Length: 372
Picture 1 (cartoon, one colour):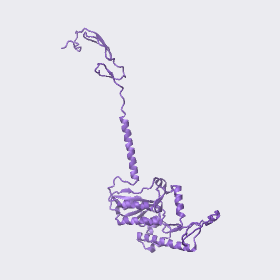
Picture 2 (picture 1 turned 90 degrees about the vertical axis):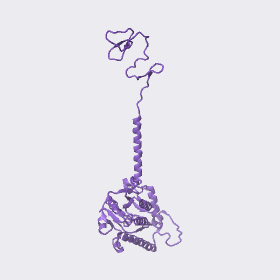
Picture 3 (picture 1 turned 45 degrees about the vertical axis):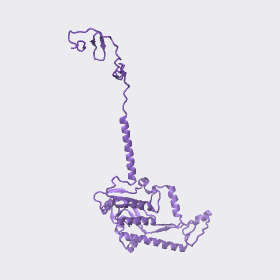
């Protein structure tokens, strides 16, 4: 046993040397040490709450550690997680609103909206119009998608341009020829040109209170000659033929022009009637008996053969899925979802200046306004 070992503290045994006071325990403690040169402690024990001492460095002196900093890793990780969630959610919303689908390989029913007044060409979205360009391109997009087995037209329109409905009908027939059934789901109203489109589809589903029908043609002319005369506004019109300025607002129609307008109206009307007869498997005579421009409720329309079934939007989806050979719950592919303004407020929310300019151009056309 090492006699100099300070841990050898048998009773009766003592050691000569200096005594050193040790603090930091519950009571005073003296330890006897051998005769050795007395060395000052490197550093006093720090007070409670002070940073701990590090082991002595190469000089033998202790080092005071810097205060420990709290880690912000958790905060940064949470912030990054929130940002990723927001970005991912935004992408999903934009993708879905644009008509995307997260399961494009599943058999789907494509939904195409016809909402608002029907026009040819293209009009900026959010104005409450259904244009032939938008609807036609949406139908082509659906037909070109191999996962689409059927199409549902969600119709909520009082009509509009006969040319617009004819252009849309052309695309409907192409879809049918490609083996893609097309079903109409009528909303509040599906009349005139909107019914013209609906009649070309394979099946029409409507509510009992849906307003439909209004099979006919109207051509309006505005005669503002009295106003121009009162305001002292004169017009000089140079024309190459008798009917070239027919419909001009500076004068009314002549008797010959009125007779000619009637012939044009009836020619367009007969095309409308023939299309309805073909689409609804009716005779031209049967259609003419009910095609005097009147509106029918869903109940009356079903009785006279203008619609097939009562049902809501999802009933139409189910019927289209069955016709397309889809088993079970079908996936829905929204091809041209209405704008936010249309969804929140309907077609009444429109840009006044753009609408006014468009209407002025349309109604002041020297050919008047021929519409279904």
